[in-house]
Length: 165
Image (cartoon, rainbow, N blue to C red; front, side, top):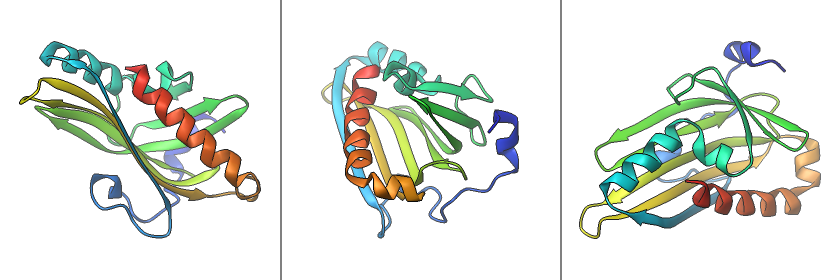
């Protein structure tokens, strides 16, 4: 699948934007967070990295995107090993103390669901937190067959995302 072909595709799930609130039933849920530093400058640097696909790239994931900075509607092909998974950015978080984006799966992705990549600044402690939130279920016969392996892989890559920024 080519990047320019993704615009014609529809998302593979109906709960668009659900990583912003309670995660929907019927999916596996993932929430991971880690303190990655302190201070407003560290937050701004991490936020800029996240918005330029830095959590993904820093974790060793290949990213081919229609935009340099994540924006609603950006199409993305993410790659890990031989796998190329199509996604679309469904919302962006742009608040004074929190920034990031969520993307959802498109046809051809082995999973069905959404993932949020964000950083948060806590003014009270001046700590900077990286956060990943996701809901997903297997979207192909082969991802169902490899279920335990793909679930483990998601947990491992999520930890890598947190360390990437």
